[in-house]
Length: 132
Image 1 (cartoon, one colour):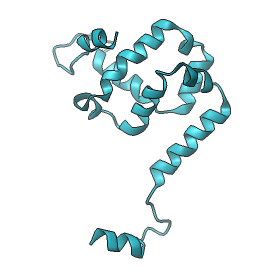
Image 2: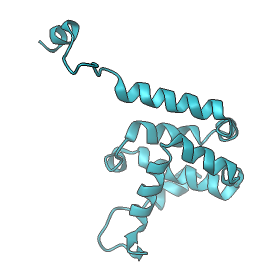
Image 3: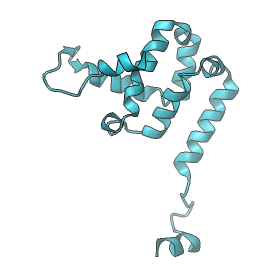
């Protein structure tokens, strides 16, 4: 199925038909980037969308964003692609309903986004020696 989906991957092209003023690629890019938000994943789960085979197949199709030629368009590729990968697992699609799972994802995202930031804005002695 992934093989078939890969054959229909849109290319970001000016000649592509528009839907509401946007290309299919632009719409899919906007949607896939929303998947980096644990609150949004929880919302999709509460709406039962993650239980629908057609929606799960669409998530599988969106895996094309993991290819470098498409990942370069993602604003936050790490969390976006990780969420897309997790959504391929039925267990995760069930677990994201849990506030605990959502909270862990938020915590991990904050830790990852603030790693290496020094509270006073000045590099530590260890960071200075690594940069030399």
